[in-house]
Length: 526
Image (cartoon, rainbow, N blue to C red; front, side):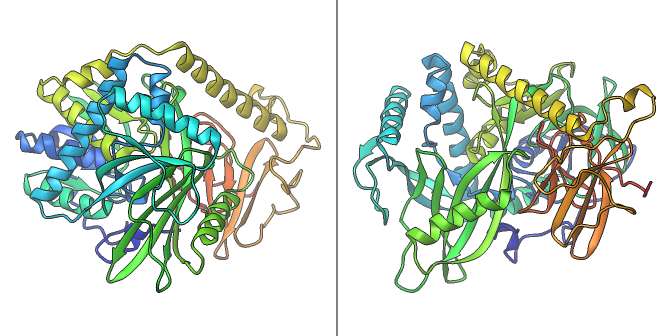
């Protein structure tokens, strides 16, 4: 599964990205971990101020969420404002809108200045049911209160019937990898270094900080975690975020069929997102949605299939050319987090919880973080920083973490290894399968799944995860290296996904994303 953006000829991959050299022992004003939109914009703003900046990227720039987005740069964001208004006063909701407005304005101004193409489009949130229409009206009230010029319309120029829609004109859509490339070149032109294939493992000390990576250590006055979710557990933000995975596809349209002219998102679940894109004279329809919490579905394939079925039903003759998936983090109180990380002594910063609207929230976070580092102050950022979690947000956090604890206990219970930590001999019981079709114990030599398949089982005292992909069978520890969850096989992307906090690993155990900082260990046959 590769996104349309990452498959374009001008993009790069882990193998083709021309990395700067990592110089162990070097010193920097700021080290930024993560070369997506948050990290690159932050690095650029700091480099513009004269700082010596190092950007560390575990794979290549844009490899994670930025390169797998549907790339809408919009202030109309489904029904987000109504959800925020249920938890916060008007001042906080207004600050969220102002943050996104500044993020959007900065990004589009930057693209204009650097001749990076984008398209102005009208944004719609549409409803096909009475319940969806109620959500539209609630969102309309919240948006109007914040000063957004949103209007209710009956026709959204879609090829299927709707009950109504919200419209916000003159928003924008982009190719995110065009933006990544422009930012990357600009950071380097201003003296910044961007090192790919290098993962931040830890940060220690103070004045200056020691940054530990898998290539060695460097020192810095400040560290910025632009890693989707903080990879340092200070502040326990993994308990305040819900990791979400959603799906997208590009479809080539047949002759005579045109994509709807705007950017669209449904008010109902499962969500359906639409926009168009044209490249090399070929027109594509981009659809997205059908999300779920990471690692907590019986089959990821079924979510992607549901999205594609919906698309071909409404756009007959469309041919799928690309499918992909992206990971986003939703704060339990719905407001993004950015700024100083607790217990970082004022020198470790982060941004997270953009709730699928990173094209504006990521830039806003970068503006706020860079202002903090450079001694500035932004009014909307101060308002967001000083928000108080509502009772509803607190209850959501309790529910999310109760779900995490229940999943942890259930999965370990199914593997029946609860007594192994005491050092006593483990009695081999008959165990329940962790997933449908998972065997209750390994055959001699361990199971060898069919190609594209995987299983989780108990090998003595060890939870083991074994998969076969492209004829290669890999046998790993099934225990997530973050906080010990039992990983789940993602049958769509052929990855091991942790259902607790969203860490994801390749079939051979390499860490892909999430709060973990280490790979899954390989197991020797025992």
